[in-house]
Length: 300
Image (cartoon, rainbow, N blue to C red; front, side, top):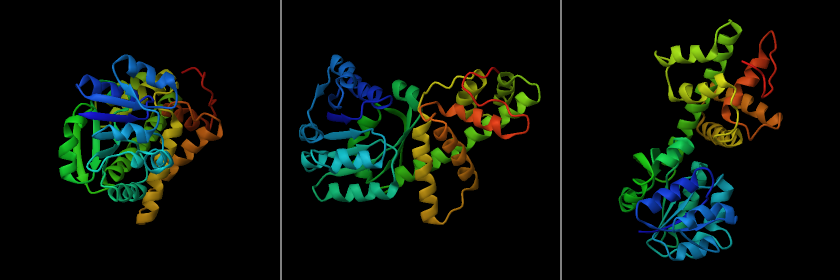
């Protein structure tokens, strides 16, 4: 299948590479040559604009930062909508606002272009290993057409409902992930203040009911004081903002989500939006009696 890919960052580049490895003809678009280079070396073609890319593709994937970015590359000047053929499919794997997704899908439909919102979970490692969880919104028959492509990217592809349902599911995912990360930060801070080794406490908790992938991955980083970004915390800030806006629109109270947002905001206030989410623990450490510096280099 002829596939276009827009957005070649920490997630998009390995996803596009997996489509190439799946035997598909891949054309990529990125503003920076450094982003395109590794994929071109693997056999990808390039396009000068999203519209040019879309003109030669059966399906176009996007993996960009936020709602405005998706709107720009799909509907803006030189965007996908201006080159895509009727009957082609746009698959947005970004994490964006569900309501905006429905608006974008309607605009593409006016040109005869189908859309799926298909946000992913699994992080950079899942992108590299093609083990992502993919949450899909849109028509089931459209999903069936591009299912072979999604199978190149993930181990679990689930149809969640109509347009926006994939993004709403991803919002639930991010809420649970972030609140759990906050809980992990608090538990390991308590352990440290009690004179325990946070790494050993994490291992003990992983053997019981408190075990989770968040405790496994982010807890390890917190215990080792490794705050170099896997996915930058500023992106989780964007995601949690989507969650809270959705909850407000639906009249749903999310007290734990609101508290977690205060901590993520705190990272931004310290100019640490490019740190890993595990840096949440440094803010928790500054809240309780006895202080404990919030710096990156504090010893465990």
